[in-house]
Amino acid sequence: QGCAFAALQGLSAEGPEIRQHLADVGGIEAMMTAMVNYSTLVKVQSSGMLVLARLCGDSKEHCARLATNPQSVLTAMEVLREDARALEAGCLMLGRLATYDAGWRLGAVRAGAVPSVLAAMQVHPS
Image (cartoon, rainbow, N blue to C red; front, side, top):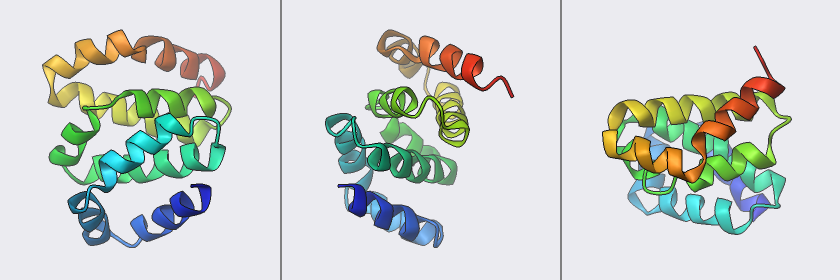
């Protein structure tokens, strides 16, 4: 899993066309599921967080798909609580998601987004 996520991270850096293809073949949902199922694998969490952040930055549609499973981002933020880059990516994704969908905001709060963001602020105030 870790090697697969590292490969996806590298491929996703090649540009939005590659990321769109990843999204088209169900990569977003597969990554979110794996991030929850393999929560103890740091490489899965860190690579997954970066790829999902890139996807969310590409389009509103990708963010909407991420909104179906906010637990993947929250899990990564918990596992990577000492990684400022990952926490920043997580907070940015949560912020983007919150602007796209009013219904998602309530679900994210119920899933634990507020404590995750507050913990990130405490660990890395910058």
